[in-house]
Length: 511
Image 1 (cartoon, helix red, strand yellow):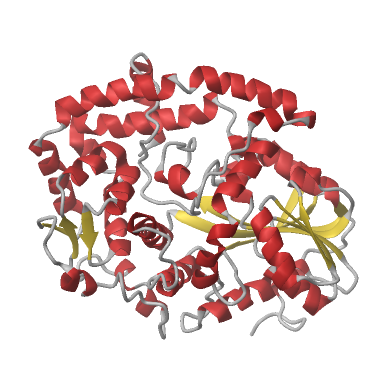
Image 2: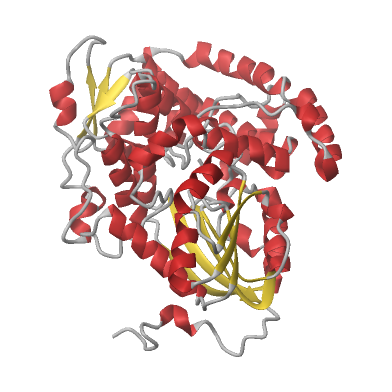
């Protein structure tokens, strides 16, 4: 949805409601919530205690109004628009702008053969050329239709009223199937900017976006506090679900994009290439001191410490990941710590962060960059690897991404990275590699598809993962979601030259 249209209707909607707790327009996300262990607010002490109390008080006042008043608007809209005509309007939009073929089937009909005939269960993992891998992003005219099997017509209204949340949850509930979930989401993204043709039926979608953004404005989100960040990370990674990552990821347990510089390499090769590329960009020398903010499962720190003989302090807010890293990637040159980035101390030759910045929250971007600045030597190098967002505007905290995938997370846009906090930084290098995530996600889905030895997870949970991986692949294929690697030095750096090493191979320009 376009943010200027949201702003246009905001004034009239504000008089009627606050945001629905479950209404996105986004069809995609980036991280998966595994469970929600609670962190008692009463146990929060220290310098953030006062801010936390203010946040809790504000949340106690504002939060009840969000579902109550928002539900009133959606109830009225549902009564007015919950008709077969609404289903027909959505189908007409799909027929006009997409290659989706809607097929109505009964709840008990066996369509396993039709589903398996598509690419969902046989994703294109490798190819001799980019054309082989990104085949459905090539030509709209020559593509065969993708089938959307509707078991329960109510799912159409869930999509119409709740956007991506309705799409994802209705899939989790078994209300629809497809012969290619990834491509179905890709096709649905075609109508994202065409919903004005729905007329009044678009109002619930707009309301959800507007008030999802307002929720982020009215409430200090958990990711902006140390205690909140601990809670969010605890919901994303848990010791009982590490086995999912062990089956899904590559042999190095890299839970971020692989560098598919060649479309015909394996996931393991792509992840190794990414780690090697990060090492080159950091221009490491033996004995250097490094700070890693958010070390994942520890393999990148182990790789750099082993290959370059550097000393690494690595911090995380996931106890499960820290214990796993200490067990599998312990190294005399690595100090794995359970700590928030805001508590980091000391001076380092290099600072780097891969896949953590998305957890920081837009309100805390300046805090993050200032902390890195304080920890980096004047002639040091900072590498930031983060997901990015294609659309301007406020972040919608009522989307599928926030409920199931990425609690408290907010993806940056390029313009947010040009705020005042960037004035004392010098951007040396910018690298966009989001298309590489298509093969990464397909590989993860392929590794996970059998769910071998994981009978404790029910069908709904497994479908949630499968939808997550498929819809994310579609978002990266469409370049709606990005991956950026940025190399920064200080504006007052004592370095005598630019970071030429990033563009050199064996000390020379590539041939």
